[in-house]
Image (cartoon, rainbow, N blue to C red; front, side):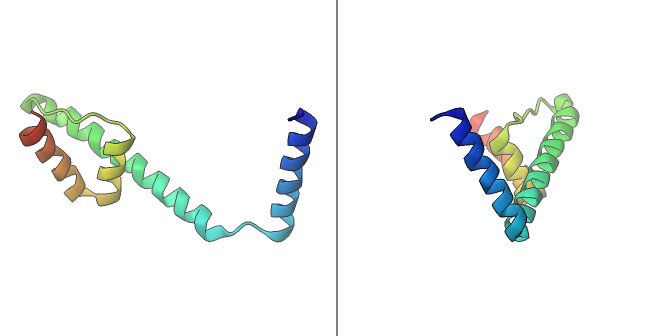
Length: 88
């Protein structure tokens, strides 16, 4: 497609969203999930920092961050159990 057409379509969609208003609930939900995944990554960072003396390392990636962030401490404990007994 021509760049002018793509820019025109995107501009029209932006104007339409501005005039009609964006639905706030899905945007808020995506923001909350993003914050929880970041908190999960922070949990994993501290687990790896303090678990290094116990030879414990859980990789920090999107899946493990999502599990520990969305499930909280039980998810973090599940990741540790999986790392200790299943993987290693």
